[in-house]
Image 1 (cartoon, rainbow, N blue to C red):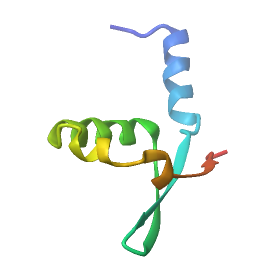
Image 2: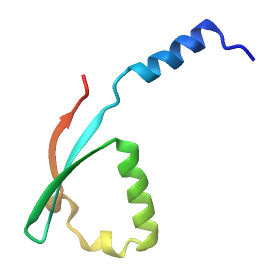
Image 3: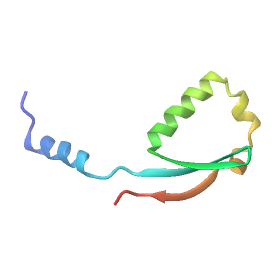
Length: 76
């Protein structure tokens, strides 16, 4: 099957356009580090851990008090 020129163009542009990356700062036991990940990677991790721990850990956290929302890193 041959792709139309429009579909070929969209495929190329999808590969060329930068992905948005988020910087997340983690603080635990007096240590701090940061990681860069795409949103869907964090979402997948949340889904997995939420199911594994049946929400028990998540419900006990004051999420907004523990998450530092840092700058949004683009790859422009």
